[in-house]
Length: 409
Ligand SMILES: Nc1ncnc2c1ncn2[C@@H]1O[C@H](COP(=O)(O)OP(=O)(O)OP(=O)(O)O)[C@@H](O)[C@H]1O
Image (cartoon, rainbow, N blue to C red; front, top):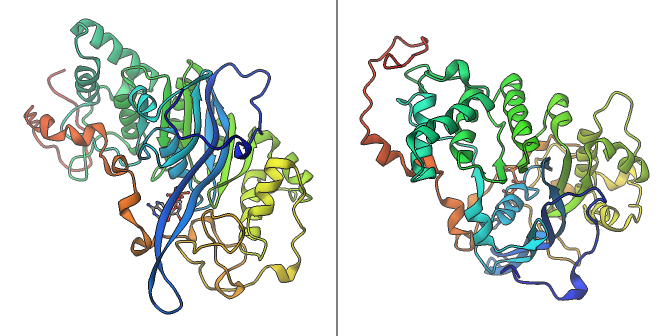
């Protein structure tokens, strides 16, 4: 039995079921994460309010596949990933998580999976090979040097890094590997011990489309080799969308869609929103979500549709306001019956069909005390950097713009 606190049986959502051809992976049921936020009431007094950052999320991520978590900014993607990866303080997350059919505790998931963060902090003065060897020393412990070298060589090949094997990681001052290569090294550092479960938070952020593609291609290979891969991703290109096997689309902490990327158009059609010719169905679904979010209905009808198939109300023109005002960055408390992540309550504060990334965090509204201590933890490479500095690699500096090869190899 896992240590996630269980929901009373009547609130556990039974759909969507895993498909008939499901061969294992991660299953989650009724994941709910509630935080207490402080806000000022009409009289200017601070009041506490409970908000569901995740609300009854049920679904699965199959082994051998990439599951992409998408949604507008502030949808709860990172929170969801943190929750699945055992990075939300024990007891705060309600629901159930199982791996290959067995309930697992957050701490077990955390110990056995790899979590790759956006900001890859690698040591600039190490080559790709040295970085991975160092990770092997750290992560593989007592296995022989020959075995470690073999593991690193295989990984270098698997990640498509053979041509940059002896190139320094580099930084702003010393040109080293490219952004995409750097991200792949970072992935290598975290998967050297062969975890079967992989979480990646925005692995393509900050990369150009070619590099982003190459990163996801390699992640795709890793998944096909038998790992369960779950990643959050913003506005993936059409080519990257083809590499995603399964989609989980969230908004306001609720499940909007779960299934194959290929079935998104069908889902929209059933909802009464046929995808206009020439438009990308995933982007269109997210646009539709935004429209509901900015209407008086909110996204509840879309969550209901995803859950039960009950068709959402058609949006009339006057349901949507046209405004140039950017929506509230931290969604304020919604007025509907359920207490999940909030949305702007009045028409006057919202805009129609706003770009996905208009949201920004307002740190003042955060109650950091409820955030998991793990969320602030730094990646392996960062936490080891003090240790790495003791290695004292002192390669001579190259003129800016020139790739450095390690003269020792
Ligand atoms: N500890 C917390 N207390 C209060 N609100 C929080 C806390 N952590 C996250 N939030 C809020 O929860 C919502 C979801 O945050 P999350 O980072 O998961 O969204 P996201 O979909 O990953 O967003 P983005 O795409 O912008 O990175 C946001 O509105 C955020 O402000």
